[in-house]
Image 1 (cartoon, helix red, strand yellow):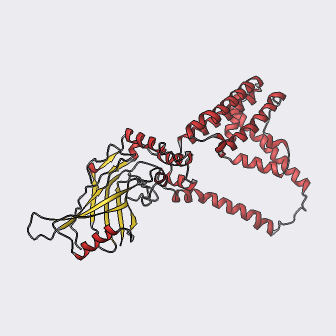
Image 2 (spheres, one colour):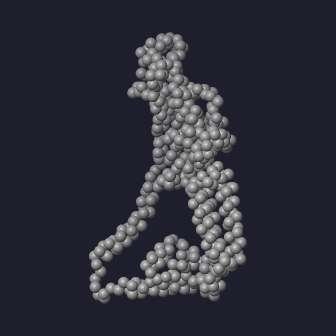
Amino acid sequence: ERSGENVVQAIQENKVPVAFLVMLLVQFILIIIDRALYLRRNVCGKLFFQLFQVIAVHVWLFFVLPEITRTKFSDNIIAQFWYLFKCIYFGYSSIQIRLGYPQRIAGNFFMKRFNYINQMLYRIYSIIPFLLELRRIMDWIFTNTALGLTSWFQLEDIYADVYLNKCARWTEKKYPTKRGVPRSKLLKYGIAGLLFALLILIILFPLLFFSLSSSFYQSNPPTEVYVEIKLGGYLPIFKMTAQDTDIVSFKSADYNNLRSSIYSSNLGPRVEDTAYAFLRDFNPDDIRCVNLFSRSVDLWETIPVRFSYTITRNPPNRHDSEPITTVVTSENIVEITLDDQQIRTALIEILNETFDSRTTTQFTINKLLPRFLHVKPKAKPRHIDPFKTIFPYEYFGNITMSLNRATSVANSTDVWWSVFENRTEFQVSPSCELKTNG
């Protein structure tokens, strides 16, 4: 369902796709209908049910699903495997329609033979939670009987005990043992030891699962975003904090514009679907637009360039085994190469204090400001790789930095930095974004 994400990440984010849930529910309903027709021995109903499924499956796989996923059936490996299993099911159902249902329906196919394999399969089938109870209730509903539900359950228990006893008698005949001889240590410590370890694992698995899993998904927007720019080991030359009105929620129109921009990149269905699958798991309320003021809040007191950012959130009032991180920090590093003569010359003049104080010294650093970030509950912010491919020229913004000196006070030594984003005609420009420079 989600391209580019593995099962571990899906469990960590605790999000169940709605499409997966709907498909699971549809399959469950089809199984119930098929079982009801089997218990009622309704061959005519089975025929119409078979025709309906054949038409529905082919319409879904060859027309509806390609329109939704923008992937042809010939390129969808998972759909091909599912179609293969459906064809096998249709083949067995056709044989059942042609030969008719058995007149005597009792038990299940595990009980047709008495051996180790059938006995083990029946025991596994019996320990699956609620499966045995669901089958017994359905059998009672769709079978003509004078027994009450409790008596029906007792009859099923008697039938199961008789089957297990017959399997035990078969074992005694097939593999006879001497009476009164103690069991071997290999049997006791081998098989029994493995069963003992398995039971311990089953007991401890819920505790292990809940200790490793994160809290259930709940939107937790940032309340504060702090950014700074450093030159090598010097103190930060630019600091800015965004709060309250500077952090604006996405609107539905902005969300739809971003979604439509993904499919206008003409990079191929696979790349576009990866980005769309990432965006589809978020609502407009989950996305925030952060606007930063251009002038630094601190004076500059004092060579890769580092753009660091810190995001603060208020976690929900939940008592989880592992709390959500309220403050997450990350950075983006851009190397200044020998070809960046403008930046190198400006920095040398600034550090040597040889720049003209009557003018504004400025330079541009390309691809320093990330325009999209994915903030997880307990991990540092990370870049969205599918969006990097979809928007290669827009994902990182170019930053122009200028050094300013106070001119209103004579002989003032106060200097500060201003930062502006070099704007172009971006493909994605949400309404929450400030239209002024900075």
